[in-house]
Image (cartoon, rainbow, N blue to C red):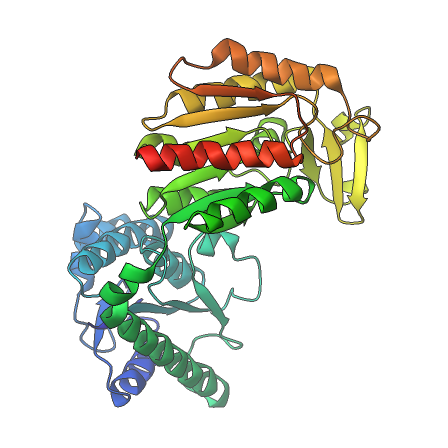
Length: 409
């Protein structure tokens, strides 16, 4: 299978040719996709730009006539992603490599994000030393800083691009070897379970994880920091997850109130859409996350806060907010096409939400619990326990409930 080289051969053709030749010198096949617009390609690609824009539902002539650089980049990203997905489905992708500035990085990483976990993805970018979340998303994309602009071969770019080719060759060789062993390895792989955890729900999740692993499953624990929740949802959507232990749904509070750890509006939807068995709880929904205390918006000045450390400030959710969160959880759970349970810890939802702790506010918790009761569908198993979320019995019940679903499946 070839390694995909994706980029603009009009502006970065010399550099792509340099990397391509070094990959070929190591015995690797390559397939070059040209996503350029403005000038002729430096060398003949395997997939011309006309096919990229056709995959995006337009033509190269239309893009050139529009003379809109932003639109051209958007269409190139769309078309490249579609082509790469098709090539992967045909078993023709060993890895993907891109070089570029802002436009090339946008196009290259769009295609990379469309590929599943495990396929080697390497983006050499002038932007790699800055904020790269919008490029990486929740995929395993390696960002390499180009150090100098990607403009010609010099003593700096030669070193960076040689390292690029060597890194890609190493990843692709390992990926190919793993693919050959894939069928045999799959026989030994344990079914995957995902779980969500925060520091304030760690005792619960760790105990439940141990119990589930003892039953023969492999548990992937995601830190509920926004990106963690989004990554978990992407794994579930990819169809590689057998069950979900969603103990810590705190990211919903950040999305609702405006905290910094939101996982977006699609949080708590992938398992429901795919019919994956899930056990949901309300872990850490007593809090909204902000950065240092002086970064908290002024509109919240009269709220209850807990300074977790110098970089993390927690704000207590109110009864009104918890009522809304309860409705959201109940409705998303009720839309599930698979077995689903909601577990309610009636004595507190986090380590700092229990009697004597700073976020203990029974009225706020009760508002959430009652909202869930009001809105949940009859097909969802609602389990109420007169326990704290970090009590051992709560963790045991959560694990046993999920294991029961999995056994029936």
